Image 1 (cartoon, one colour):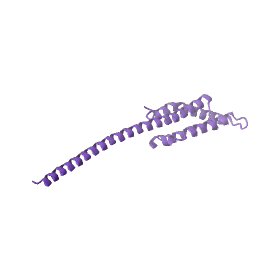
Image 2 (cartoon, one colour; image 1 turned 90 degrees about the vertical axis):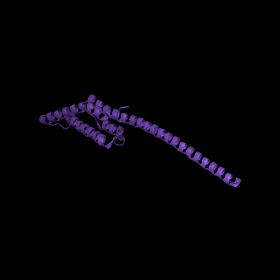
Image 3 (cartoon, rainbow, N blue to C red; image 1 turned 45 degrees about the horizontal axis):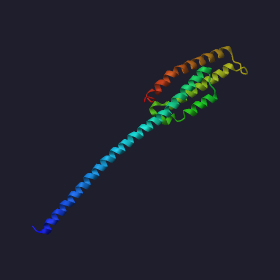
Amino acid sequence: MSCAEILTLVLTFALVSITAFYAWSTYRILKANEHAVEAIRDQSKELTRLNVYDKRLRVYDAIRGFISDLLRRGTTDDEKLMEMLRETKHAKFLFPVDDDLGGYIDLLYHKGLDLEYKEKELSSESRPCSQERREKLAEESYGLKNWFTAQFDTVDSKFKKHLQL
């Protein structure tokens, strides 16, 4: 074997060794990057979950506050109804569609509006109504107040799975 052939073999072996080392180190760097990206993804999910949790808690507090105020005062008004809608307007984006919290908030709004109108008609002196009508309004108003009282448990059950840490 001549010196040139030996030199060619040594250089070929050196080139193969360097290429193998480069491939191995590149593979290790890619694996390390995958782990770093996964850790960042997990951290991002956790931060998003905590951020969404805070917003969901605000929706929950707004609904419970609305119901508490309604039961304390015995009725509601346009201002309180609009405040509840304003404070819960993002609920449809914060909760899964299948939970239909947007529909539930609409139901609270419409029942509150119904109660407000019944209470106004009951207390109106400018528009007197018959005793039979008053009794019917009082019964319907009482039923709505009972419905709102039961909503504390309903709200808790609807939000429970979304407010677990």
